[in-house]
Image (cartoon, rainbow, N blue to C red; front, top):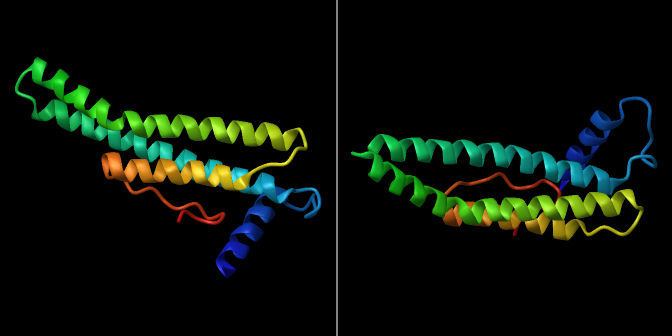
Amino acid sequence: MWYLRLIWLLLFLTQCGSGCTPATLRPQAVAAHTVARVANAAGKQLAEQMRRQGSDAIDLAASAAEARAALELVEDQWRPVWAAHDELAIVHEAYAEQLEAGGDVDLEALVDSYCELRAVALDSVQVALPDVPTGGCS
């Protein structure tokens, strides 16, 4: 687990610079930021893969009707992935709001939501997303 401590330290240093102390940067905020960065990178990877699959579907179609049908299949395949992505955005927003309000936050729920997106992406469209460094997916 030494690498997790290193990641936390690096995140702390890049977030704070020379103007803050560990007491002013809550670990929960760093964790939320870490999950958000991983999720944003994953979203870009997913969008690119979907674009590529749609483009391939069009290229392989012999007619406009076949292209439309192929694109509908691509959209159907990706629907659960984007639903999981949207759910992660909702969970992250709730986490951030609770954190800003000074309430108790549930990092496990946030990580679990990302892990669900990761699992759905692999199952539905065979895209392997990176693990999240704040505890990881089981």
